[in-house]
Amino acid sequence: MSSPPRKQKSRATGRDDRVRQGTPRAAPAPVAPAPERPSPIVPPGNVQSRALMAVIAIMSFLACLTLGGVSMVRATASAWQGGISREITIQIKPSEGRDMNADLLKARDIALQFVGTLDGRIVDEAATERLLEPWLGTGLDFDELPVPRLVIVTIDESNPPDFAAMGKALTDALPNAYLDDHRAWVDRLSAMADATTSIGVAIMALVFFAMILTVIFATRGALAGSRNIVEVLHFVGAESAFVANQFQRHFFRIALKGAITGGVLVCLFFFAVGFWQGHYLATPGADQTTALFGAISVGSGAYFGIALTILMISVLSTLTARITVIRTIREIDLVRSDPERLDGL
Image (cartoon, rainbow, N blue to C red; front, top):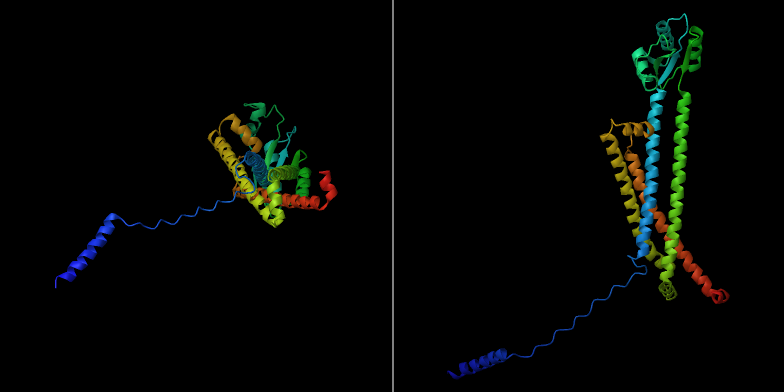
């Protein structure tokens, strides 16, 4: 009865001995090497790409700076026009035998009789002296100097008075009175704003044109460096759109990086200049800058325009690269189909 267990034990012992001695195991299956990623047609980080990115960044900076400057000038001109168009000025010249204060009161009363006038304010001698202080200094004697006095009349912009009739009424009652409705200044400011806008548009058009030419030359240079690859791909069946897609992706990335760099630098420039102007507001330099250019700050509309300019630069660069590649491939096909032109090359 004890023999069967001994056989089982011996078999078990044999298996244990084989395990301890080590049985040959199957060799692991060789791991297939990962397929190499095909190299792009256009090398992404060559010197030409970096140079093109720098050029596009400069073009973007100039275009966005022009846009911000035009926006700032138009905002300043609009503020000036709004301040001027809300008021008219009655100038009373000194005349012998006439009471200046009485003439001022009479001129104000005549102006307020017209529909469309809201308020009238006489500029007193102290305020007149402050206005003339930069040119004539302090301590003026109005009895010795023939200094005109002013009456400032606030008008309703939506329903202005009849300026011709008001001027005639003032001249009939006061021969030494003169009405200035500021229309000449408003027209000049409007013309200046329009001229600034036209100049800005012309500058941006030149910048875009120069950028397009730069992208064309860069694309042709990249094609010249990869001409053999492009020809092989094209003649084995790759369509022009496939090759153009490779180039347009490459140039879109370059243009987008360059345009964003230029736009960010412009935003930092306006922020830095605005901070300087606000921090040194009381200094003569800041005062002169404010007098010439107004408050150096751009609004949300200008920042939206900068973002739109960045997008336009990227899209124009991409389209330019695509069109250039397709036209170059067509030229290759034309040369291949014309033996005489091929022999000439």
